[in-house]
Length: 314
Image (tube, rainbow, N blue to C red; front, side, top):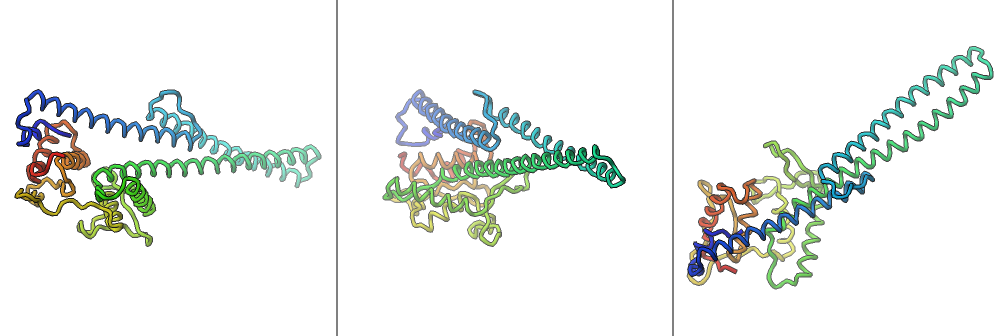
């Protein structure tokens, strides 16, 4: 997002009035809100479709997704209870059959034999119903969990794509195909969410041997989705790694260092607009809220420390 401070810091835009700067900053903010809002709608629509497919329970009109999920879960729980009820009925019928068998063995009459025959038929029927219902419920539960994991993984990978830059000479059709191929490769690396040690979850990936994939460029920490995606594309030779040095007498952007750095990397940016997008994305990934005082302070700090003003606007 473009801020008033960013506009004020650019010498090429010194002629803009305060009113013009405010208008540009507001347009940038509104555009970002539209992009984020559209992405959330896409995720919720996909979740609605998954719930309907895996549970067989339709959404009621414009029912909120969280209410829809709660209602579908309750109906699935009711199915589970019906399975338990059938199990109880099987036990009762089994006891009744055994009782009748015992009486016949002790010299029971024809009426008892007929009762036993009917009891056996009832027991077989209930068992078949139980087996069918339990198999359907177990499959729906497994499929639903897999679909939800897939949506969560897709969401993380969609965020990871935001900072990826392809070599400029590649046509769009080729980059889309290469990106799809890289994402499919990553999805095949046994993705799973694990405890991040801070009360949340993080996504990690495993190799063919079942071991967690670790990044040698990040102190052997588990690969993040973004790092793994860059690794895949780098191996294809299509990744734009960004400018290695500044030209025309401009001073190089300083990378954040260990002491007071922001840990925001904009080395892939070729323009101030791209740098702004990368900084915003990385700050939001850290949990900072766009528009908050802390967000703006960190944004300004990253902007200055990375010498973004030395880049062209577009």
